[in-house]
Length: 125
Image (tube, rainbow, N blue to C red; front, side, top):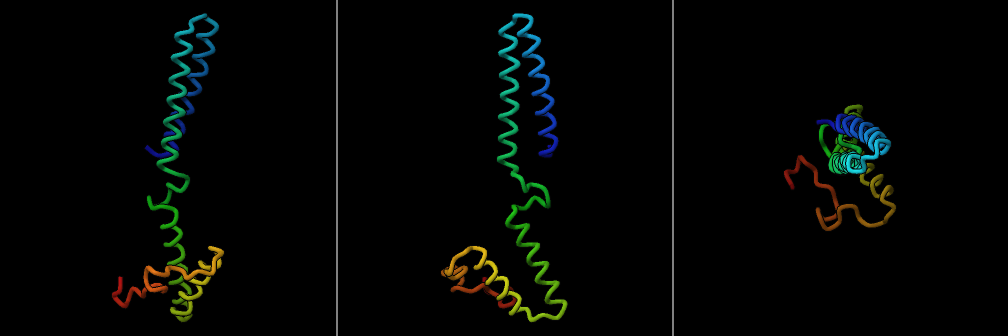
């Protein structure tokens, strides 16, 4: 079930639960009011779990938000290179932009790939 579907079901259950609590309280049936309250609380707990598991960026292609952003950046790099820019220069620009965004002066990826991003055409992993 999609996150939107889960939300709709939870909203319906909560609406019916609140109505059930009100009607049971007016009818002096504390057991029924408590039952409606517990069912409503369980529905809200399910929504919280579904949100935590799905997350806000669970749309798209099922990839984590960082992976989606990486795909967008790679697509833009390909477009700029196709328009005639020098690929190594564009990739250096992207690395420097990442470094600027992180707000640090440390080497991006230092220690992982010797301080540089490997070129996929080199066969290095």
